[in-house]
Structures are given as C-alpha cells and as structure tokens.
Length: 75
Image 1 (tube, helix red, strand yellow):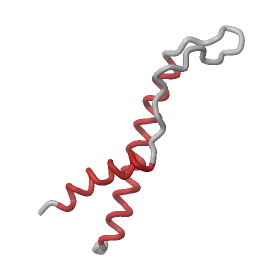
Image 2 (cartoon, one colour; image 1 turned 135 degrees about the horizontal axis):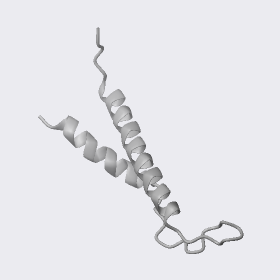
Image 3 (cartoon, rainbow, N blue to C red; image 1 turned 90 degrees about the vertical axis):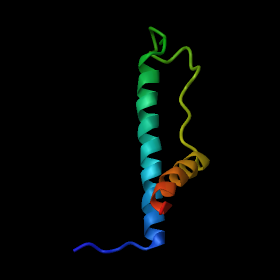
C-alpha cells in the first residue's frame, strides 16, 4: 500500500535528490581533477591547484531542485 505525499514532503524529497545529484557530480569531478594534477614528488601535495571543481552551494542546489520540481509540477 502506498501513501500519497503532501507537497512539503515532495519538495523535501526533491531537494534531497538535487543535493545528492550535485554532491555525486562534485565527487566524480573532484576525483578526476585530483588524479590529473601535478604533485610534488616529496610531499605528494598538488602543485597546480587551478580549475578545482566548486563544491555545490545552496544556490546551486536550489536551482537544481527547481529544475527537478518543474517536472513534477507539469500537468
């Protein structure tokens, strides 16, 4: 038996999905970025920290959630 979710529950789920999607994307991009950087041979620290992926901000998460919610809101 399935229960119907109210609008607040749907929006909270979509917000969580948007956050998960952006965090997964960030993790993947960060992993690739770290693997392609030049490192100091002695310390192993990254020498050229340019073009590092940006951690998802609240604004980015809300924008992604809006995109996802627009699909749910369509009639």
